[in-house]
Image (tube, rainbow, N blue to C red; front, top):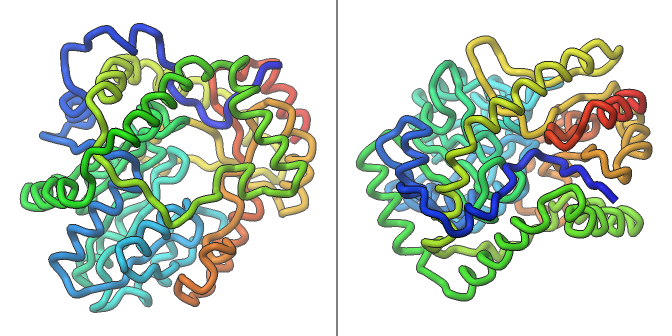
Length: 393
């Protein structure tokens, strides 16, 4: 059975596993992102923890403002650092933070605002940066799913005080797990390096596990292999009603922190050489398919604002209501066509976060979570398969 991945990750080639790229992953990514230096961490979440820890050590502030709809790991990272996650609502029908709500939340105890570039789409940073400057808070760009995107011509992750990308599976470039941490602030860059050296030592156990998982990715990240690695566990979780597990939101407080090893970084460096062409392919395919989706009555397609340029691991569409979204999922989720949900809940509705977040109400975030549907933009989803998806929608 063929299984289309829900996100378009860059497939590895066997030569990635042993041939030489001639440059390090750090140097290659710095050139790709047009910065002087980047820092590689064991995950995007680890990059966030390193950033928050470095900021916390320089300040008595303790509040970190998060979007009401984002990856639960973002909230768990804040809690891991002993800080207080504060939820900010979204604009209606969008993933951007509501500037009015954000302005009310920000005060002299706000350490940082986390802005999420969701699913390759680019967040509007202008109001966040202005509010942060007025209150003395830092802006951290969560660009986990947006390696290669640009906000008003600036690579995402560089407009704020610090930013991070994820190198997990399905995020484009991958080392199976990994993160990229960047900043233009030289003193902060050194503090981030010192903090990572302090809290994330090398671990043979974790590196051997991640190396084995990366070999599995190289072997199975194909439509035939994904039916075993992704499709079968997905359908089992759905049958059992474990939707948090089905989309991979079943996280815990136990967040690994370790230094990534040389071999995995070398694999990433070799694959990075193919990333620009791959991103261009995804962009061309998305532009064609977005036009068709936008013509469907009642469906809202998430796009970028003028001057922004995102990446396209998948397409995000808002259905008219929860019932329409759920009906589409009933037809498509288990058919191996790459249709899925990004996250199951708004942050306030995850059982394992209950009682640990601020009591702020985020109705727009809940509405967004209830209507969002994601469609794979993998090149393996051919035109006939996309026709099937459109017919179901």
